[in-house]
Image (cartoon, rainbow, N blue to C red):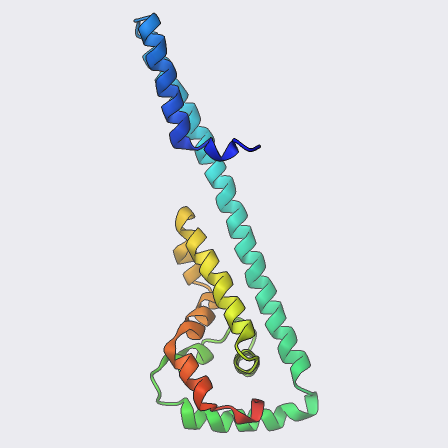
Length: 192
């Protein structure tokens, strides 16, 4: 409905108040006050029910996206590297890991250690490198989507929930200045 955007909780309160004021002008008894209080309670109840429904839908959408990314990254890992080449890649990655990872306190090491959401560290590392070497397109889309989720999460007080996920860990890694620095220095030439 075109006027639905005006049916906010605040506007309904104002409308109820206006009705009561008009009523009291023509019928100066106390009944309108009771009606106003009752109307406010009903509006508040409807508003809370609507907000709870929106919150549930938002949570469902986020969980679905989280699952979709998890599955997509797993698919990337399974299809991007041929089976016979995995051992060779793991060896190179292990060497890179020792040179650029251990003992380094920056965010790069933290998010690889804690994984991107999938089953074991090798798979997670492969996923990181797949994202790094797609000209930033996958990374940019992820950041844009998670920005949107975080913005909407404020309305439902769900920021902590989103920030507790590995998807948010990945987001923090992608928006961190070290991410761009590592890309610029091309620490992963065997993937480029």
